Length: 450
Ligand code: SF4
Ligand code: SF4
Image (cartoon, rainbow, N blue to C red; front, side, top):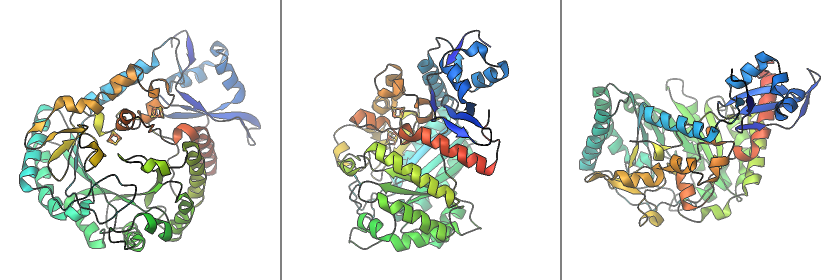
């Protein structure tokens, strides 16, 4: 144990509260460098804050140093975190591939920045993409290939999914890698037969879909391009999928929220609970942000979103949902910073960011990193890929942010474009800690005690 310890910069603490059972004032403390949580007596917290570490019981000190709430005095913590993140990127055993089988989508969501066209990933582009992936597998020491089917709407590209999956699966196997896949879909074409096919024949183990609230508000936002409503079909597809015991699949449902539909979240939570799917799905709400457009102008102010989110979390807990209150350590922020991760769009364009393809405003700003027929331009990758270097150099507010270890910086593209991509946890972490504590004493009395 180093002689001189001090409170890490990387922590978040709840307000003081009185624990009736212990008859003591306490606080919940989150050590973001390890994503560990402890419940501490307020007196102990005051001692730590005043730097009187030597007066604290050695077992407690050892525990708090173990979770890096206490660190060696003078440590350059930012450098330690960025070094750890870079090491995780270097050692990443997973080759992440994102494939957009088509540029088409049935929906016309007003906040979407993409321009949709009737185009599908051609067979020769599939072959060329596989050749690039093979080079990466040969040169790296990967143990897994994770493929994400992305859009536009990937279920409109089933012919590509059917043709490409056996080929990429074989390639993964050839290099001793486990193959898994996930699909991000609007859910409209996710019939029972389609879900069976995806999971049983095409190794899809995760399905993410979206409902922007209950029928009226959802249909105002996520209707078809011809104006037809979509809520009923997507909701039915979701409930049918979540009710299946024969499919081994993780389901996530997302609601995109701005000032015009946030009131629809609570009714949707109740509707999902009434349908009995709360134990079968992960549900989360995400604020609308700029997608190369001005969709963010309709967003709720960040603090307002964060405050509503705490109410939604509480409602979800009361309705039996599993709620992710405490973010885990996030050493690899996204595809953009990975050495080899890549996305191919339906024209064969290569990217290291999921929000760049089909966005007209990005067509001239070279977020494209290459083309399947010509290969990748490594230096073009660095436009987003150098993010951690910029953070280490103090370029963004992430350099001084206590949430960096569990946030990673959220979205390199956001910072590059000059908007703040900070997650809600930046604003509501103290309340999340209190909720997590309440949840822990409801389920397991000693779960969070130090
Ligand atoms: S994106 Fe925001 S919350 Fe995340 S590390 Fe950067 S400043 Fe902090
Ligand atoms: S840079 Fe942002 S938008 Fe692009 S992949 Fe990363 S998180 Fe997503």
